[in-house]
Image (tube, rainbow, N blue to C red; front, top):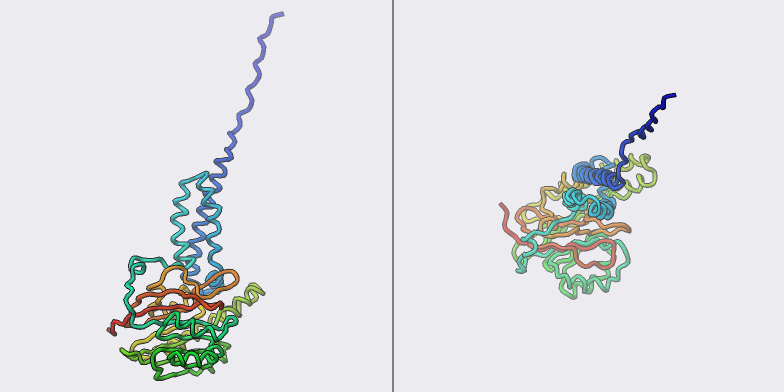
Length: 355
């Protein structure tokens, strides 16, 4: 029989090459980086445009904003090790994170090289109600900061107890329920806006106008303590969407209270300063609507995060000194506190004259 040629074995079936683990992880990292960048942009839009308008957007306004920076602790080292080009995406995200989400006020050459010359007026605002405070410490602390005029909120007990020491040191003192003014200069007039209609809504209603006779001019200072968002936030935190109606009612209440306070401020003629515990940061739509045309002294002349209220998890800038026409910012900073849950804002002002 003829011999048959041996049959060659069939080649193994071709299979698509497996994706290298490094390549797969690189693609996953790229997705994570771009999703993070989009999330930061979304947070900017929520906080800067919709907070205190749409109640869900108000939650990130008052929540710990440093949480938005935590993904960088993972994404930056991962990008450095596997895809360094992604570092450019993260670097481009950081300014939006710092300025738009976390509320960082950047330093400028003007702020860093501010003239040390004596300002026309130094103003201080401080909520001293959150904690135990020995009144004996109050007058020495105030002397150390050397304001010309200081306004306080939640202050009656402490200022009443410290009043003898303050008068002995040459200060002029005025105090009502929840509003106090301590001045180096004579206090000529005090007008308390009737709070009853605000109290009926469950609001704060601390709106007081003072006229102070400085050596150069009469200055009007309005001391505010506006309603807090706390009750609305608590309702949502405890009951989720079930607390939405309380949150919306709180937004309406705070909007109305700011409108009434602004109308009271608009009755003033001449040099005007509005200071106090606004219970909202500058990104709030309520703040922008009623107070955005004032100059915020810290935004103008300070730098950093400027947190004035401390909670268990974070700080937030809700205490402000606002300047009417004619004032120029010479400096602003958050000063040493007295161990309470707020910190004082101190600003130095120069008078340029009304237009």
